Image (cartoon, rainbow over all chains, first blue to last red; front, side, top):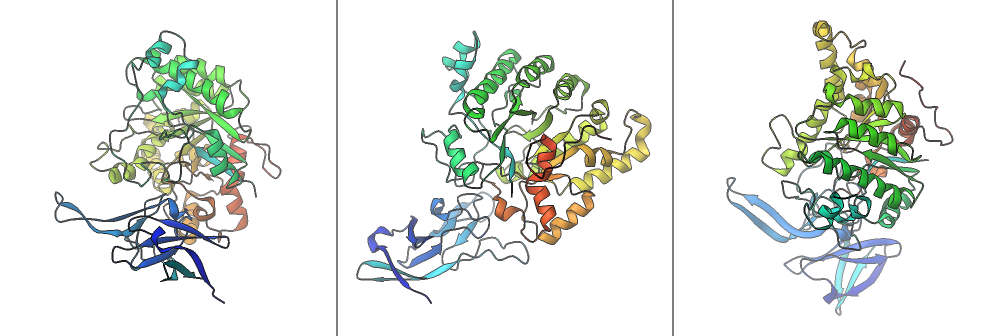
Length: 122
Length: 357
């Protein structure tokens, strides 16, 4: 049975940063997308289990031709602190498809804000 | 289950840390900043700039200079039985001033012995040498081999050395007479067949080719035949390429043995008997793919586990070696093969092979 947990104040979760919180023995990483929405992500990378709180929020490098590098979707991409795998915080999907027959999607939990508090349901 | 990590990169906060272990004139040179150490000729692209981003040294240095941190993040976190320290400061990279290079290798060894091997008995060490001065390297191996926790000689893979060349034989002689393993590890100077390429991703993908070249060099130049008791380990070069290299060398041997009659065994037999490959980086193979590669290699004695801590492409033992593997194979990869290679006294480990036959 899932339970709603009051994990921190809303103002503690800012765009471009990762906020780890403990829910029981599990670490959940909170992030705020540029649109204002929250994400609550399981604290371990689905690849090798790195602690995602040490990762970084970034964007996607894109290029039109090799000389026109630019950063798009800033604040919507989570990079793992170990191997640097990129994950889309909007969808949870990895930027590059995983090897066949393997799931490598971020695990999201329901998250809401109420009265300036962040509530995660696990 | 025991766990042996065959590739752990201890370091220092800077080359000046070697000063207490250097004699003059090099002591003053390094103390005064006459040389400031190697720097890589590229920018890292991982979040931790080449290291895991969760590796934070208390002194703020980019390298791992704190034994307590490795103990906490690796030895204790994963209950590691033995961690083979492999360094990432390889004086062979200095192409000039071989006296300085050899002195720094000796100083680094003394630092590892004083700071790391005494810190935790689970640490075992690699003897660093300046391979460009093989006679001095040979004496350094004899000197450091007296330390009971030194288990191997480290030969760094750089851009201009193929270790099969007869010039380097004194190093192998010293390793053999001291009953040490010979390890190969890439460096920031290692190159593929056309250099490093134009991007970090290219350079990093080429590392396995640099390693393949060394395996071909030492087997086809007779190092395995000249030193029949020596055993070799290749670190951080991957392993899925080995079937190809063995098949290719065997075919070449069948058609070209006339040129190298001192090679008495099929190259693949030499490799299976005395070459070991560390699993990292594991390339995300599925269980079935891994079993197929091992089948093609022809023996399950060959793979040994490594994390490559603290580098960004760290392999977590719980994720890198599939739990779906048969238990006996998983144990071989995670500890038994390495225990046999290094002669670690762990209950349940097989006896170390006394000879290659």
